[in-house]
Length: 418
Image (cartoon, rainbow, N blue to C red):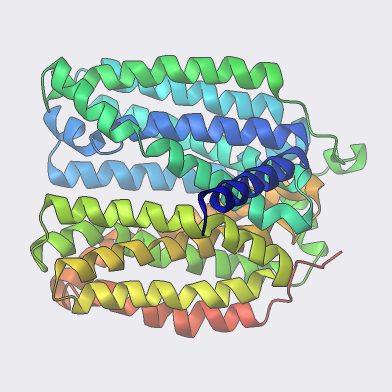
């Protein structure tokens, strides 16, 4: 292919992306810019959070307990926050979520010991649930069905692009501030705090309250539980979908904490192989995230889920039976298909209820997914110790194949659903 043809093809791709971004409502563009900026800031500290907490005095058991506390808090507050968003509007709670994220970073930055991190994780869990519910409402309100899976995967792609740079920037900053220690890591949280303040100001200026049907006065007078019961009047599929969403969350919540540990301790991977696995995963998402989202918007969500899920199975099998560093890196690359499948599943979630019920619906989904995420790492640890490390990655395949997929088959396709 000639250079001129490559240049023309590249311009065509850029033009299509630009055209796609202009189609949704303004709030979508605000949301993806917030997500990309937040992802960059997250990448500054994501690899240092546990090191920082242990350096402040936490034991390994206390470190795990802090994570469980965060998952539990997220589950408990999910439904009430979704109800509040539906009743009182999106913008104030979305901004509150960003503000609380900044507050959590300030706690991290000034923490005198590991116990303060519990407070930071509590605040962070609250903020992420507010932001997550807000993003669900924005996507449901701003994107047409024909663009929804593409839009969500575009958001994920931009997040991963922005996060490519921040870990290396953080490495240079940590070196400049004194190395991998409390002294060297602490300034990164100050930087994140300042960054979230700028994001808060940007979103406050640009985000608009979605023009969507809200609770009527009659609904507003009803009780909290009745407001949630009204969701299930819309469709008989919702209870099954809650099970599907929870079963989608469980395998990854179980395996992710143990994946690098398995690669290192069982397969002998060094830091370069581990880095190669992470980089390959990001590269595959960047290559296939948007095309798979576009495919889901054309042929249906379920077909793409059926297409991508076996690739995640292959990833786990390659990991377990790997005999070389190359195979481990390929296994890491294929892990991205789980996240692509999950985002397409999320598109179906948004299409099962009216936009006016999206806050409550997102809250319910978050509640049950959170309940699953609390015990999953502990179950993975028990499987590792009592059955064997390989079964941490083999059992979830059977779990998914014989539970989630059969349930998904019973749910009608949502792409053309009115």
